[in-house]
Image (tube, rainbow, N blue to C red; front, side):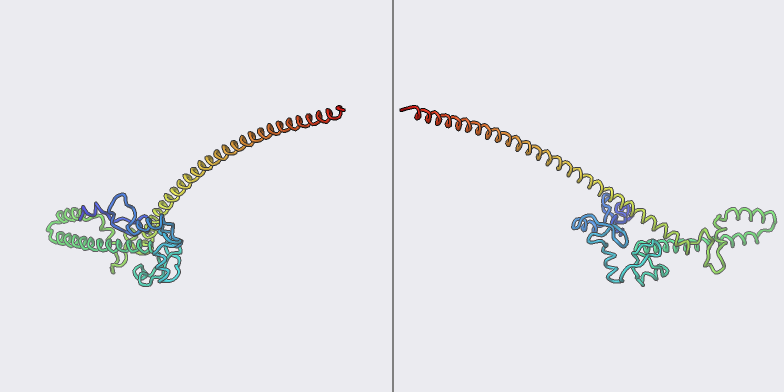
Length: 282
């Protein structure tokens, strides 16, 4: 199982942020998003949750389905984005808070960690109590004050330093010292930190995608410039050829016109000679 988890760890999809088992180290998106990329191309950020999973239109499938089922979104109490749908059943699991999908996941993880840490603290507290009882038995069974002092000193040194933290627990066991408390507002801080990490990852992904879009646009602009320059050179060559042809045709017409003028002058001269010869003859 350990080798399987190492070979195929559970990671978050770069697009929809859903957890999935990674089958390849080069794969960063889940199978569903991979299929959508093939069908619809690279997704855009959702207009509600800002997750880069809007393959069709401006909304991701999760927000589209939630809007149909629960109505328009509200402002999330954690991230303040207009992407929290009023799922009444889920609100019971997050202390009645109105959270978006990502904040709900983060809040549930923090609550789970809080529960596990409380369980660990409870078991540690019982162990500390047993150490105290052992110390009491050793102290009461000592016959000499010197031995009692030595026993007290050695046992107190063996008690973990965490004892001072457990002593801050009240008699009803519900409240903890500030450095151990994980309830609100401490829980909110963990949720905010988790949410900020999610937002940073999302922003990094958006920045990377925008960089890719800019590179693609620059590449397209370069191709268009090259095409424009080629078309311009072709047009200039064509215009030069047309100008050369026009000049040649004009020269040919001018030469032909001069030849015709010469012929006309010669005909006119011959006619004049004929007329003058006819007049002089008796």
